[in-house]
Image (cartoon, rainbow, N blue to C red; front, side, top):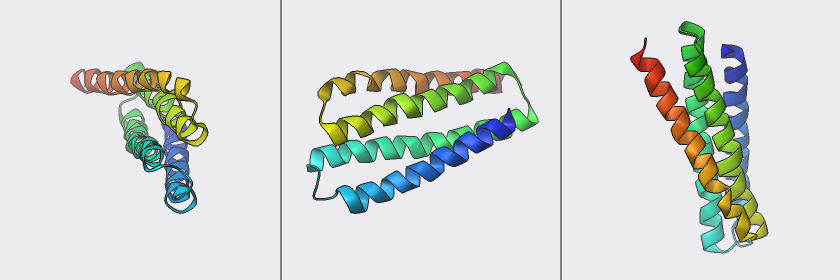
Length: 122
């Protein structure tokens, strides 16, 4: 499982950097400042949680356990739902996509809670 999360975290970080560069160089002037800020929020949270997934990879290698793996999958789902919905919202302007964002936020919170519980049991 540690290799899986190492790969997922590395890919999420790579895509986050690419999207950050795209936002800074390709979207400036094409999106309103408000929508560009929404896009940048998606990138920021993706990068935070790419790093969290790398921490999960290290913890899984050392300790293993279902709670640690569940945290990694929650972080992954959070990136897809939270950041993905913000990217889609900012690029399309379809505001109903904003309804998905809180689900990603809940996935992020669940991931952090699972990681805390796993750490407390070590």
